[in-house]
Every structure is written in C-alpha cells, then in structure tokens.
Length: 209
Ligand SMILES: [Zn+2]
Ligand SMILES: [Zn+2]
Ligand SMILES: [Zn+2]
Image (cartoon, rainbow, N blue to C red; front, side, top):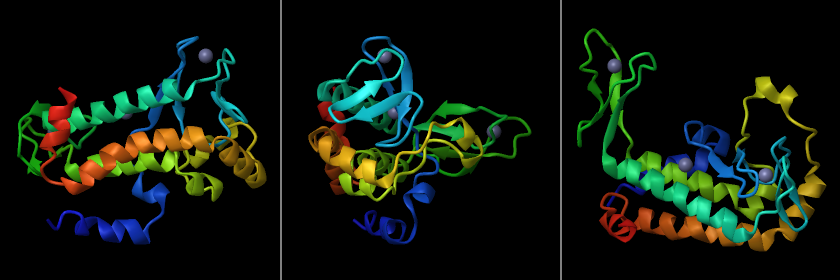
C-alpha cells in the first residue's frame, strides 16, 4: 500500500527529537528494588547507569541481565499494539478526558457537551512511530552520535546528572553492543511486521493471544 510512502518525509527531514515528540517513554522497572524509571539509551540519568558490563539501577546497584530488559521491552511493545487494536478514541482537549471505545471514528469533533476538542485514534502511524522510537534507544549508531531524543525537557536540565562525554558514550556503546543488539532485535521483530502490514496488522494480533 502507500501507507509506508507516507512516512518518507518524516524519515528524511526531521530529527528524532521532533519526530518522537509525542511518543511514550520506555519505562523499566528494577527487578530487585522495584523502582521504575525511563530508559533513554546511553545517556546520563539519575536513575540508571550504563556501565561497561550492562545497565545498572542507581537505587540498589542491581545489574540488569539482557533478558530482564528485553522481556520488559517486549511487554511494553505488546501493550502499545493492544492499545492500537483496542481502537481507543480520545479527545485532544486535556481538560475533557473523554475516551470512548469506538472503532473507525477519525478526527471527529468531541461529542461531550460543549467541548470543542477533536477526538483522535491511536493510529497505525502513531504505533509505527512508537516502535521506531524504541528502536532508536538500542541503535548503536544513534547512541554514538548522540542523536537520541532527550528524556527531559531542556528546562529541567538542571536536575540531570553530569553529562556523559561523547568519547565515553562511544566506548560504552561498544562495550554494550550485544545488549543493545539483543533488544534492538526484539523491536525489529515487531517493526518489520508493522511495516509490512502497515494497515492490516492482524497477524501480530493473533500472535499475541
Ligand atoms: Zn533497583
Ligand atoms: Zn510502553
Ligand atoms: Zn472533548
């Protein structure tokens, strides 16, 4: 179909920060102390450290196994896919909060009394973009080139820990290449399916049940 072609301008002309401005973060929870935090790739974070032998929780020093990350990643991806399939339609007015489970209404005015918002659906484009974002987090090249979308807004930069140097990010990326590649392949599995069946993603859904 021509759904994929519709993504091409996005691919080539805008930065990941812009492209991913509306995506959800990848939230990881520590299997040891059960705190949870957003993972934003190999960056400075007050919640986690990427050290030469993996990802470490800053609260309890637990070192994640690759499987402890990839399982959570897969669960997160599936929850986004089911959101897409549930056909939730939400009003874009944050004060309205109208969410109706109705399929195939697209960009209709909100039916809530007096609300001027527009209802939108969690679309295939949003899902595809979300998967591309997860993919970027585990992309060695994007990590090394510091091209990842920042986790926080610029105005709360003061609360972030000291930045990692480009040189140390390069070294840490190589040291964690296997970890990144394992997780990236999890995303790729869904991304290639999603791309191929940009409109009809029925097979992924069957696989989930
Ligand atoms: Zn922990
Ligand atoms: Zn998620
Ligand atoms: Zn509304």
